[in-house]
Image (cartoon, rainbow, N blue to C red; front, top):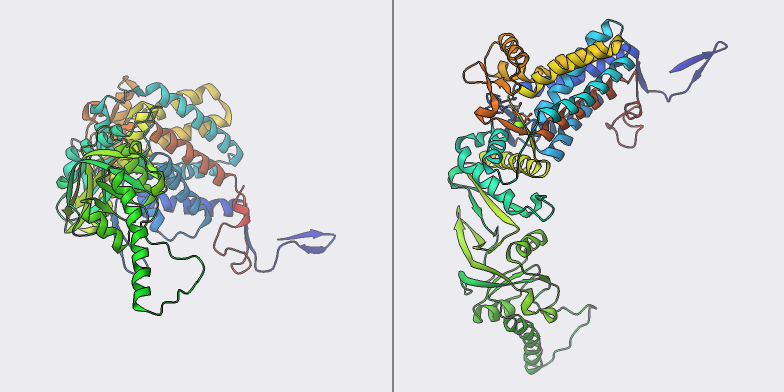
Length: 539
Ligand code: ADP
Ligand code: MG
């Protein structure tokens, strides 16, 4: 960048810095954003296709999940990266709608190009888009339907819609039942369902139908010692966050042992210490022990002799969930154990699942933590299933908390397009153009749904607009019949928040990209983090 001042060029940027300005910068950014949207468009909806992703070391992932695809793609362009961020935010906030959010973002930018070509200033477009985005949230809120967390029928439909198009589709009934039951069990006093309290364990082998919900915990561990009982009824469970081991001396003291007798005495004193610790566990009345730390051979022996089922090196998060499932407290020292700290479960058992041992803590009275064991034929299918289940758990918990749902299948987007066009009329001027463009951009969702189902998208849009003008607000794309249909009747429902989040973050990023008129990129080696966002991109 060189400015002329009295004939003398003033160099303000380091050599090697590249810059693109104005129209060129804008075109470049928009093209990148459109490319990201195009990459995921064919995966949208129940008839969407999957992508096979191959990473640097040849591992493959087969997925239909927008955010997974984008995360795996090695994206360099800064504007494209911003698009990927939309999907990541969507995933983190609501767990579903990642593809939709990116497609909408791309469409907003693509259609903005048309306005730019008509010399509408980017600032005007940005303003119009922001107004339209805010209005969209109002409109969506008005057409949303309120549901109760006890309405398991709707919650199952929510889960089912989120699972649509994924490999998980085969056995949706069973899976959705598990998902809804799991979320409902962890609802807390404030009506929130924290997914951290749902432990999902993947197992290769069997089929999706064999996936199960454990009312309690299932953890990927085995008994500490083969002589311990395999199964304990009416379990009294101690959760211990302290080692059952002989404490090694802190400093590197050498113990001088010169006779056999001394060695014997030393070993005995070590055994006594451990025995005394185990005694405290036994005295507590526990018949099952989950230990976050180690249990040494001597302790294992004593525990086995006392008929206690013990599991060692249990993860902290598993221990916390065990506490929620069994009502027990995590105790930090063997000296602090009281009878009140023990949790209970009808049955604790070591069972073989797909060739590996697992510990099941089941028949808990009022478990506030549960486990889902996900099964599938191959590693790839279990992985995709786990992603799908995560999405479904998220959407169900989002509805449990937000209590509002909308129809899916492009119905809300068509309704938005219609209402936003009416709204644009009341604004007038150049902003009106931008709002109308925003309105048309919404139709990309039903269009892509129709295209991916092999339908004539133009016919479908014409029919859908007509239906919505006639007041049929929940009509969307029926991918099987190729005709508009009431999505609520078909059971295609989504959380309101999935839609509002997708539209507002897509609009936000589109506005951000439109406002950029200068890309200043430092040379790779010059920046502290080569390949990151050039300074001009932040703002
Ligand atoms: P995303 O990552 O955006 O969730 P999906 O591939 O899951 O992408 O597709 C979501 C879209 O598909 C939503 O608009 C949703 O309403 C729609 N959809 C889901 N199931 C159906 C169905 N059975 N019929 C029509 N549309 C559906
Ligand atoms: Mg989805």
